[in-house]
Image (cartoon, rainbow, N blue to C red; front, side, top):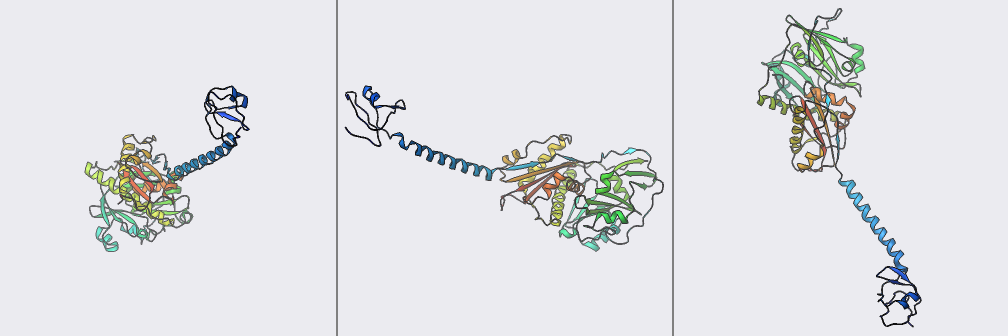
Length: 411
């Protein structure tokens, strides 16, 4: 009788006996048959490899499966699109002035106006401004009826001058090389606390009208208000670094118009005239550009690469700002950021969004984000290389992206 060491065979229906030295398997049922079972069976038993190699086969199959799963995992990890969306940052100032006593508190001291630096420009004509700094890089509208004269380059001398009727009414300075006497950008806030008279209440008089600004603890640590003769200084602090981030010198009227602190008044309240739709849109677009420029100014100061503007993402930022504005500035999300990015076909590996509402302007908004830990993390994150901003009537959306270089549609 033949002996099969590797294969089993089938016995035709008429075969009466078979001798075999290895177990045989019925492929129909998958059961192992003993020699006696085979003799009794009249069903064909098809020759197949015996089970001695089945363990090796299963091991090889398992290793291949593991390799495939590992490859799939790697693909998922390297193609995952992560997004971080922070809660909206709402201005801590209610921006609702209340009638009340606006008289100066007893003992309030008057400090002489600085004789040098950018503060001397407030109240001067644009001829003085252009004589000192030349023509601006841009002239654009604001939300308050005056124009912004923007000096955006280089970053070390970045500043914006508010101009109305040919007169400078404020100067906002973020460039580290600018003269903001008696302060210095990048200087320690502790030095200002030691050398400057700081009052928790500051009074402003315009004609017969009186306005009283009250500062809380956060105001005193993040945005000081210092009164001089005929001009006021807002000192914006980077709370985490403990240093001066930017300085704004402004006229009494603009200070009242902005209402950057809690305010009570006695007399008439100064308010802005409603803007036409065209001017409002233009002011929003100007604010978008300022947000992105100031973000890069502060990133450079932290030795980070500037972010490139992304035109395709700007459309999304504007839509999300408008959605937030229509949502009455609630803390409800405008929906996952990943959805509009996917619909727009924007390829990215990382994305984030900061939202803010009701801040005075773009400069105050960026300052608020810098002093909020979760929003600050996006501004000073090394992994982003793109940005886009959208503004809709004091509601801001700022997008951050990590996209491959070069990224298709960018400005």
